[in-house]
Length: 273
Image (cartoon, rainbow, N blue to C red):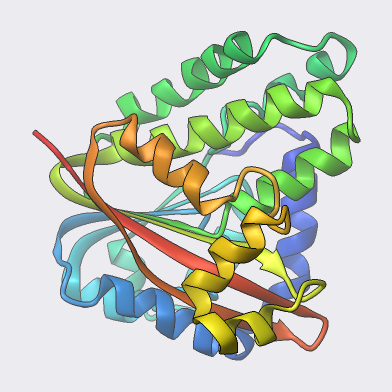
């Protein structure tokens, strides 16, 4: 398995994954919601973007529907540990890929010193990501599993609130969404799942009042969503790609712990020919 050179994004994800390793049970409800999105889908190849510890997916179930399960994450250790927990027949179906899925990890130090123009940053990110597309090919199903919020938080913590943050965040989010769309083969299904609003806001009250998806739209309009995770933004990015028939399939509250609770949405589309 290849490794990603040390950088801030890798170090942050390595630390985050270490804190949730072995917590498969705590993800039960969230995992059920994600697996429900994949129910009925099948084919030769599925790509899981941001697989990490695989707490939020059921690999044995996926191995019954797909011949190949390709697991992508920046953190090699998390993928190694996740696969070690699986029976041999599931391990045989899984193909780990240790890669930066934003295209910007290697540029952070440079951009902190010299703020790039937004379009230049996006071009640099996509140049990195295009190599991955050429390497792994296309998939019947692609699902991005709650990566966008992690990207937003990591970049905010690295840059602080400075102009470089906006350039880097736009490049990372747009690059990741375009990567997911491009990895989806014609006629294939793309699903982007993102947590976007924490329980620092009245997510329970608004969900009870409006339903989870409308609560997300309502709170996001008030600026509650993590930058780069706003559902309207991701929908618009997909509309500008080759993904059609895009719709919000579900939304739910993910209670990871009493202090870590999130509103989550799932956006699904089909790649055109």
